[in-house]
Length: 202
Image (cartoon, helix red, strand yellow):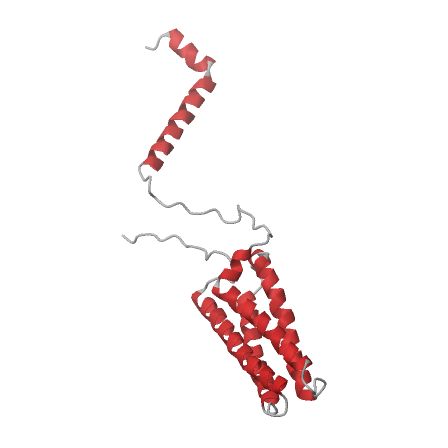
């Protein structure tokens, strides 16, 4: 038969008994975690917000280098057309449209990557849109280079513009290939590829 004092202690202080049970459960949970110290933990998605900031490291990557070369090529092509003898002709206007629009769109995309806006707006299909854009501008530059190169014998500036037109087609084709490869491999346009935990099969 239990003594009266022991019964009084249990009924008089139930909070201490509850705290003791919680402490024991916490110790058991800690022991279970310590049994597997090297076990990988799943990263919590959405906990670290992506901040819009300037990051020049993008221009040292392959897509960034291609974009910089595209911008420079667009500028040089526009200059060649502007100094030609017939800068107002239809073939010059078409080449100027391709170069100036390419300069605007590619420059805007470069700014979006440098400021991590592309990584911030992950819901937008960046790779698909860039893939379509680069494929279209590859074709446009091929046409623009041909229409000025056929008359390059009349004007050295047209001949130079035709050369840089073909260079532009190669650059945009290379950019198109990198976008296709990233889309095929499931790599995001910017940022780390989400890692899915691997579970061992027993």
